[in-house]
Image: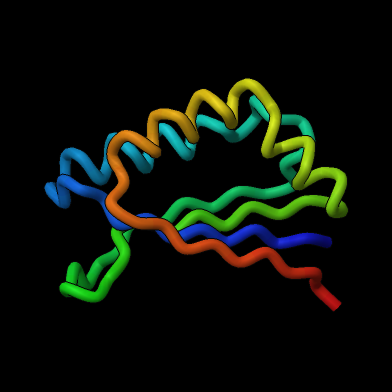
Length: 96
């Protein structure tokens, strides 16, 4: 199992902007067949060092992650997120 974790800090940190971006990410569920599970969380502390949204997606294997990266639905959401994010951090790991 491969876990893909992404943290997003948005340019506009208003609750409306954060929720719109989170909804776009949640919208991937059921649209990309290789996704085994997806979780989108909005930060509750809202501190200066906090990221606004956490995305965790699980795949059967590395091939699933690679297929996800190029899937048209993911590309559409990623293109939108790229316009609203200030910074992003990513970690991909294999569960053992």
